[in-house]
Amino acid sequence: MNAKTVAVMVSGRGTNLKVILESVARGECPVDVKLVISDKGDAEALSIARNAGVPHVVYVDPENFAGREQFDAECAELLDRHGCQWIVLAGYMRILSSSFVSRFRGRIINIHPSLLPSFVGAKAVEDALEYGVKVSGCTVHLGDEVLDGGPILAQSVVPVLDGDTRDSLHARIQVEEHRLYPATLARMANEGFDIVGRRVVWKST
Image 1 (spheres, helix red, strand yellow):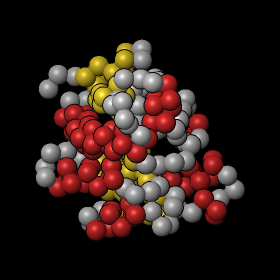
Image 2 (cartoon, helix red, strand yellow; image 1 turned 120 degrees about the vertical axis):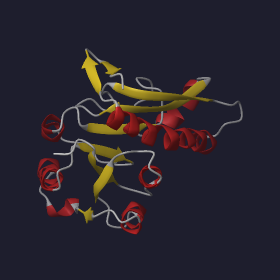
Image 3 (cartoon, rainbow, N blue to C red; image 1 turned 90 degrees about the horizontal axis):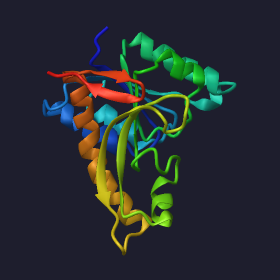
């Protein structure tokens, strides 16, 4: 199995998927995006994947399954069938089942629009503004059973301006997301890492 072969799981517009595929095309991110899975049939990310020539682009309809475990089992079968070593979550809005996380432990990568462990969950940008922080940012981390709780791979800081709205702050965070996510995947492919306690320790090249 090729450790640089990845699947990307998506639910929406696919902006992070797009920048990853563009980075791959430029030769900056040495991974092979072999599979894209969406739980939404109308997700723009599906068109982005097809237009970029991803070999396998699949819509898996949650309505066809009795629950989260069965849905995740179908996704897991697709991941194994196509030899995907890493699972990259890019705007994927479903909570992963514990059995899925256990099966792919250490191989699930996610990006979140805050400096974890602060402001987990779907309203991270709004929560940061309400709290009054002066800096926010984004975090690339490994997925585990705790929502937005896995070991941290990389972070980038974004200042919070006095006049910020949710949309203006989120837009600046996304600029950093689009830089940090492919850069972190490239580092994973080129260097690798060890987990020491909760700390990610990068291997020297």
